[in-house]
Structures are given as structure tokens and as C-alpha cells.
Length: 579
Ligand code: DGT
Ligand code: CA
Ligand code: CA
Ligand code: ZN
Image 1: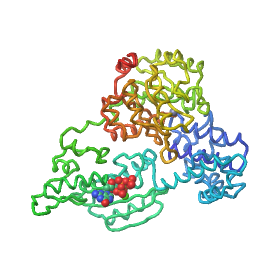
Image 2: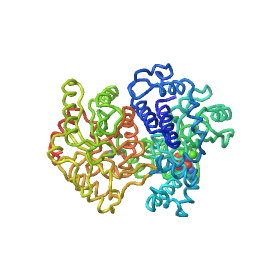
Image 3: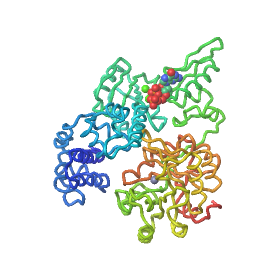
């Protein structure tokens, strides 16, 4: 049982009640309960299991009892019964971007639509557009969302499956017959989305281990269970392959199944030049120029060394120049999580965050950070409860007070200021000048051309007070394509105006995309690894951000928030042009 599961169940109950037309007060109570659980400062799972959730704002008696049942037994009959009242396919509709409970309910009640397939047919027939509150535009949007979902039907976002992978690896490592366990494939390379997981174990009893793998609690169904490999599908739909190899094969299998395929092909041709063939089991002498194969390969780096290469970190293995760099001994020393000293772009309850300023700061201190940048929404983002000038200045005062009381930690006062349609900003320069820093982001009017959008963003970066650019494309992985932008021009403009580009490490964003960072770095553009955290739990996404920064070839010196508090203070005091 985890905090996320508790919160998700409450959110789902709210949805179900909404579908049933229950009164909105009740619906809101569950939704607020979910937020409270997510933002709670303490071990909410344990407290719920012990039935100790009394006197917590946002959790009334009814919710308290339900959370207790859920946390102590692992399931909640009330929720199960509600769920059983609707066809299961109906819940898939909520995955479509732009479809909320009201629309789903209308589709179900008026057109008896209870699956994505039925919805698609109805859209194609034009009936959805005729429903009150829908129209042709909504119908087109729904069809687009369905197409996107079909395209990504078997993909998962990296950040969402990481906890699951850790759990499974931990269990495998406890197995008495397993000496080494790892996860390879796109997950190990930190691809932003993955199709399946590739587990690898070293063992003397492969058949037994394969069988035990299929009985892990996360497994929903078994696809293959052989003597050396198994494939299963997990409850969340993710496919997992397991390969069981001997201890001496392990480094070769790990290298091979980490990929990428393109990286492996390039590596194999390097081996062939030396007269060796390389596959998932080892080196073998081959061809008429065959020479003795390298002995004593115990770990993955030994394979690279045998080929005259420095070790290539998994994140770099995309055949994007890493092999040449390894041969020339000029691979970058990649940033590590322990290098981070603080982090920017975080929200509080002042806008749409779930935790107060004090709670966010306490968590950052707990994480061992030296500073935290707050950047709540500005007034134009009204759905995000954006701050107007007065509320922003009040927050500024609160932060100043906090800083005075805690000299050992520094809160940087900022704003995530909206970039308006024409590239001007949601606050006047006179207001922005009073902040420590400012993140400028696009949050609306996505339907501009690439040229217009690029000019809009570049104009914002030209502002002296814009410290960094937020989520460059606004994409939501597997849900929404980003708005069109010209990355080359934006990176050039960032370099010219000394504007930082953020690596937004919210799991659905990971924006700017890793494919652009090396270019930005080479032009001297600084990166800031920003969690865009809307709760204390989400501050921890900086770990995910570091993995994507590594994938983009970034080093410690390329990232603002690896700098000490004093260095950052000096940096922010320096006029932008001189940074
Ligand atoms: P995905 O699609 O997210 O699962 O991506 P990967 O990279 O995990 O791909 P997957 O699971 O099909 O295969 C895992 C690795 O195995 C892949 O990265 C490289 C290696 N591999 C698979 N097929 C081939 C192949 O035909 N040739 C070579 N050289 N390597 C392969
Ligand atoms: Ca895979
Ligand atoms: Ca696979
Ligand atoms: Zn934003």
C-alpha cells in the first residue's frame, strides 16, 4: 500500500460518484481527501492502517473509515461495488486528454458509449458532435486523442514505472538462487517512454528462477515460461521479459539487452575489426583474422575496455556519437543526483500546489538541499489559481520572513509567469524586478504556427527579468503533443540572451527533450533541473530529471542547480547579459 494508491482510490471514488450524479459536495470531499493524502506531511499509510487519522483537515469521518479499511486490508468494498456498477471499458475514456467526468457521463447516458472503440465509431459517424456541450471541434479533438492513444497503446512513461521496477528488482535480489539482477533495455537507458521491461538475472538454476518470476505479486498473466526466459504481463498492462543467464554471461547479456539496437550494431562492428564476434553470450573468435578473445570479462566496463573504449553510461547508448567519444577518451563526466544543491520552479497552495510554502521548504531541507525556488502561477493561469500582483507581493513578504528566520536555508522568490500571446509577460517589469528569478512559460493559445510560437517564446526570453524558460513545448508524454516550436531558434535565442532552459522533470513532461540538450550545452546554454513540483512528493522527481539530463550529455557544470547557494545568489544578482 502506498500514499499514491490511497489517493488514487479516493480520486476514482470521486469520479464514480460524479458519474452517478451524486451531490457535488460529496464528490468534492473525496477529491479534496485525495489531495490531502498526497500532500500530507507524515506517514499517512501507517496512520490510516492504525486508524489514527483524526483531526486532519480535509479528511472527515467517512473518509477516515474508508482509508483505514483500505490501508489495513488492501482493498475497499465500497469502491469495488461502485466500480462494478459501470462497464470496465468506460474507465478507459478518462485516459483521453480533454475528457472529464461530465463528458464521459454524457456519452454514457445519451449514447450508451462505454468503450474507446464505441466512442471512435460514434465520432466517425458524427453523432458525438450533436450532443449538447460537444460540437464538431470537441469531436475532432476526441478523435485526435484516440489516435494518439492507439499510437502509444503499449508505451509507459519512465517516471511512472520506476517505483515498480525498484520493487521487482529488490524481490529478485532476495531470491537465494539469484546472484545478480538488473533491468536492461530502454528503462536502463532512461528513454522517456518504454515499451517493455527487460529483466536479467545470473543464476545456476534458470528454470526455477523463471518459474518464480512468473509468481511475483505484480504479475497478472504469464505469456511464456521457458527454461531460460519468461515473459509476463503486469497488472498495469506492462510486459516484462526475464532472461536467466550464467554468471559469466551476465555482463554480455546486460550489455546486449541494454541496447540500443543501433549502439549494439556499432559495437559489434568494432569487435569484428578485431576478429571477434560479440553477442549476448560473449566474444568468440571469427573470420580469417581471428585473434584470441579477451579473457576475464567480469563486468560490463570490461567489454568496453576490451574494445579500446572508455565505459559508456547506459543513458548515452543511442549511437549518437558516444562510441567515437569513448574511443577518443572524451566522454562527458555526467551529472549525478548528489551534485544537486537546490531546485527551482515549484508550486505551493498559493496557486495550484498541494503543500504550503513551509511544507515545501521542510521537505527540501529534509532532502539535503541548500535552497528552493518557488514559482507559483501568474494571474492569467486562472485554472491554476494564478497569483495577481498583490498576492505575489504578499508571498514575497512571506518568503523574506522565512529567510530571515532560517538563515541556514534560502528560499528564492520567483514566479512562473505566463507568456502571453504576443510574447509579452503577465507581470510588468517593475514587478518582475522585485523577484529573485522568473520562469516564463506558455500555458494557453497553443494553436499558433511554429513561427509564431517560436517568436512568442523568443520575445519572452529577450526580457531582462526572464531567468529561465519553462517546459519548452508543453508536451504531455503519451497524452498530448507539444505545441510546435523551432528548437534550433529557441536554443540560439537562449544562448544569445543568456536565458536558462529548464529541464522540466515532471514525469509526463521531460521537456526540453533529451535530444536537444547537447546542442544547447555546446552553445553555452545553462540547464536548470526543475521538478515543477505541485507537492512535496513531486520534489523527488529531480532524480528523474538527472537521468534525462545525463541522457542529454549534461555535466555538473552545465546545470545551474548544481551550484552552491552562494554561487546561485551571485549568479542571480549579475545582470543577465553578464552571466
Ligand atoms: P522498448 O521498445 O522500449 O522496449 O526498447 P528496448 O530498447 O528495451 O527494446 P527491446 O525490449 O525490444 O530490446 C532490448 C534490447 O535488446 C535492445 O535495446 C537491444 C537488444 N536487441 C533487441 N533486438 C535486437 C537486434 O535485433 N539486434 C541487436 N543488435 N540488438 C537487439
Ligand atoms: Ca524493452
Ligand atoms: Ca523486450
Ligand atoms: Zn507551467
